[in-house]
Image (cartoon, rainbow, N blue to C red; front, side, top):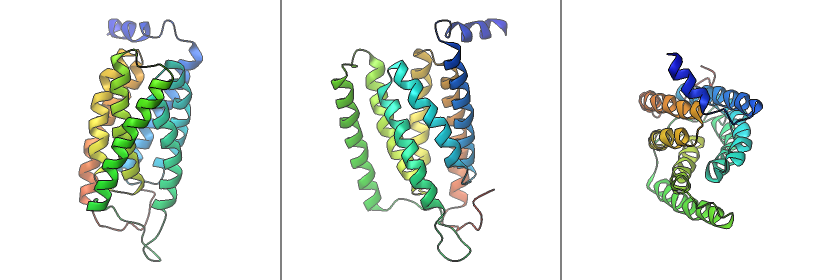
Length: 212
């Protein structure tokens, strides 16, 4: 077991202590955010805001511009989602979980393609297309952009995008030396699978409370 810990912390030998602490805090609140999302709990948004705010700073330093942009996007969409989720369909019930309409599927596709071009342009301008991780990061960013948009709108399909993006992110972050973040995405994958199943059970059911 000691060999495992030695290997993990060896990845951080050239990283400043305060960055390690910040990453751990961001991972903790990120984990809480996904867990609250699974439970359809409104706390998904304030915990997500804390996590993404920290990651914007960390990812900028590590040169993962795509993921930095998506965390900034998460920050904004968390505010939007916080507002949307608290809307009521009547005096007692909040907005329910629903599936995407054909129009929303088209918008999701446009958002995916548009994000690919936008992130690709950012990498090109900053001359960051110098590793295979940049291309993978561009793809995962587009996937997560759609996933967050669908979550803010309380659409069941958001979990499909999270699952795909999380699976890809596990080896990406491990390769970049962000071991704790890689572990986070592995746990996110598991939670996202359960989240999909739990949301499917509550499909079209309007909750009376968002704190469960």
